[in-house]
Picture 1: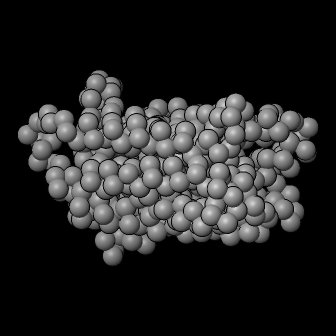
Picture 2 (picture 1 turned 135 degrees about the vertical axis):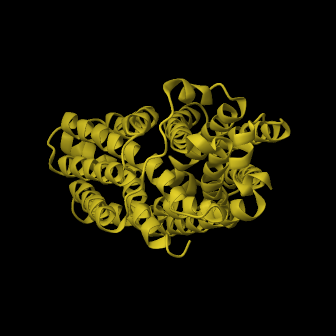
Length: 403
């Protein structure tokens, strides 16, 4: 793992760029709406479009590049992301910005599943969970550093500076991969029939559904995290930024812990424990908005640590679990999981908006917790179900998943 770490680190720079690109836009939507003449609701569709295109394109692009060298695909994905963000920074009018966001989603969708698969290939079997966590660590670092910095650039200058920042990071990643990453050969390409067979496996489809439920619940809350924190604490401005910084730090720690836990105790146990923690913390988030600033602030601080730590520990553990369920089709199953994640982001944002429209912001917590409960019940039922496997699959099964 020590020799592979620098190479995996450059892969993480790409997920940092993608995470910053995906999460920071919410903070600059008012500026985009003002400068392009769009309504705030129309500007919000930039987030939805990115998530949906990413979700639908990831499995298609992964299949299309199955025979290509991993390094070539990764450089191309980051180059497209850089070019699209540069175009967005220079765009005038809502239509060109939307087109740039769609192209950026295609570059991100081509990159992420292949980066995770390359991280697994570059690591020994006993360290695959940590490798996945390190690649995904770029996403959590984007919450701690990339999103605040991008938002600050937007506040000090313009939302165009935010897109330019992402373009520079993506271009640097493409150059780093070209120089530092060795050629990573593609795994033998599976036939279309074999790929479709993944969706006939109950355990694979069930775990993808669990991913969708968990992410949907998470983004019911995360999409409206700033007004929720304000309602619970009475804080504004810099104080809320401090809470978001704590959120990002907890997410980073949880991601690293999830990879190690999956290697040591098994991905299934790690996923179950994380979902239990999410159920409790999201229920508490709803209570906090009812209790007033004094008690609400205490609960929010505890929640803002427990929620992202649990949620982001799920990410590497669930990826590890899915690779274990289909070792010969790692890139394909990871691309399907990526699709489930981004469909969940789109669904969570929409559902959260409907909750606020018809009730109050305090009900976001119970709505999110309900989805975590459904995900937990599904995971427990899948763990109780004996998964049929061929002799080859059993021999290739990851050691951590056997635990």
